[in-house]
Image 1 (cartoon, rainbow over the protein chains, first blue to last red):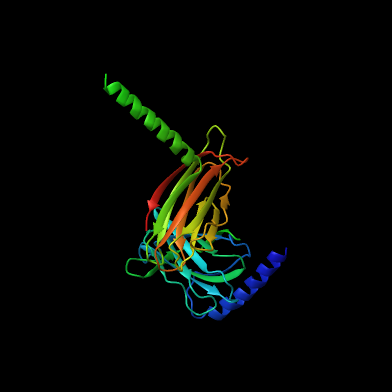
Image 2: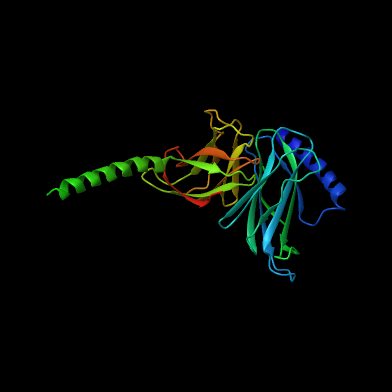
Length: 149
Length: 148
């Protein structure tokens, strides 16, 4: 119960953060929260498709560990078929995202997990875009949250 | 005549090896390395199946970050269906494994990914066990999908 309240507080703070960001970020921009447990893992599914711009060549993903500053490092992993990649935001609470992942999996479903290295709640901002081989933004379904921890 | 004892010896040796491997397969362990790139990720698929202990209830995984000691922390994630779990070894080079990550996904295919938080090569040992609901080993097979 206490954890849920804490998580709601973080979500509210994160939503306020999103409003602040709204002018500068693209559509598929998620603010999320990882609970206190060291193993807490959020799990998303996103689909890339041709929206008329052209077929997807790759998925672009990056993550930012938001304030409050806490010891765990936050990472995102992406899997599609036989491809798996990871990126970690090395510094909590600053304006810099993790290095960007490009997963060349074409159209279809991509699976993303967001997790952290230790106990303590964490908030994050996750950015996701499907792009053509020319780097144009193409069809990206709203990411579906499969598991929220 | 000489070939028969040789063949028997080989068969015996192979049988012994199979027995040893069977034990490892029931509670597998492997050593791996991650390259210097910060994003280096090893990707395995573990297949859990029923055996004489019955059907699989869960896959349990732990890992240890081996010496030499380096800055990155190593983590492993399990995925099956809509379930995902992560665990991290907080200390490099000691004898303690990460907390166990467990997914109750039953028999079938689990994705297992090993990665790290920063640049720098790393070594690890990964332990994985398919278990029934009573914690006894069930059929466990692993395949490496990606080695970075």
